[in-house]
Length: 293
Length: 241
Image (tube, chains in turn orange, red):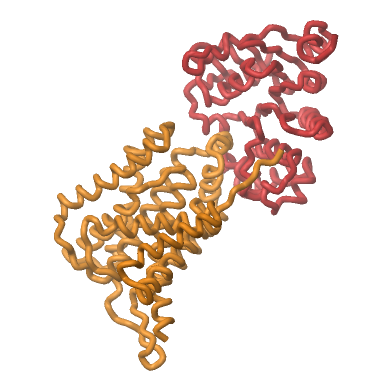
């Protein structure tokens, strides 16, 4: 039963990684860049929700909606100001810019909200569901996190598979030049991708801080890096890969914490990543399409 | 006299300091197949990309149905009635055949789902192979089928002018013939086509008119038969003696 408990916490943590990883993977897929500021968007989302709920007494749902709105806007603005002018620049320049944006967001948060940790109020309460005579306990946060992740995955899969905009996003991620020749506005599509990724980051931020209630300006960076790892693990650019990578990463991390050592858990996670990349360089679900002649 | 579909007037195009196109002028009238032939680096693709507004001429102008195309963003050019089948096909390999065609119809929002469905059926009638494989991922198609898909995809935008960039490139000789038959057939069914080719023999055999490009300039022009018969052309491009 403890095993099952650990497994469920792993899936729950993994769901958060998966939601963050989606942002990395979608942006990478379409803009071929690693948006290292993505983790900090999570932090901004969490702060917005924190202030909305605990200072202005908005209902949690409104807090989450506001956080999503602010982050979506933030994602679009960051893309317009920082990344769009570098569309033709070498990828290293874009990468450094992304790191710069990451520090900019962290330091702005430091100025605005100070470095004192805030205790995040859980948006779904602190209750738990007890099963099997109390041997298995599922906190509300865990349940909501897993359900949210599933719903987001279903919506995104439907969106990219069935809508005009979603298909245009896939077309752009394969070949921007050809997509342009179809009449697709590539810049608008990239903007849209940043908007979706950042909106999801806000959700992830709220879920993360509901489960681990310490909120600081650096709260987003480690989960951001881990979610990036999850995206690479699953195959960067692939939406199902982000889910698989996120879940595996969460489960491995929790099991490593429980059975090996909590200090070593991150090392174990990254060791597994290295092994996977040695065997499958494109990640678990990554594709490398050969050219037909 | 009716307005030509496409009119290119004295365009000069630079890549940095390289003067790739040095004053090219030509036109394409409704119902014609016009071909631009020439060796590698003659400026054929540059000309095509300039017409598609992917590149901008430093001087000169391009107009479509009498209206200048200058400063149109590339994705708006499609709405104006230009479709380009790019060099190397550039189909979306990870999407299905049908999704590729739907992307071709991206600008056709005014026609609605039923209009697009009609156009899909028209393309499938024309390319039955694509119809059989509509649910298949495009990366699994053979090279010839991929070229058909690239052409079908361009037709989905209901272009007034269809521009083909090296459709024979990288295909086996038997497929090359098949692709040219398809182009001739499209022309018969009313498409106006601008064809850029290195395979001068094939291109001229189906073209109404041709222009021969050499290092960024038009050196000769004439009808398809005239150019095929011209001794200079034979010597330079057709490997004759």
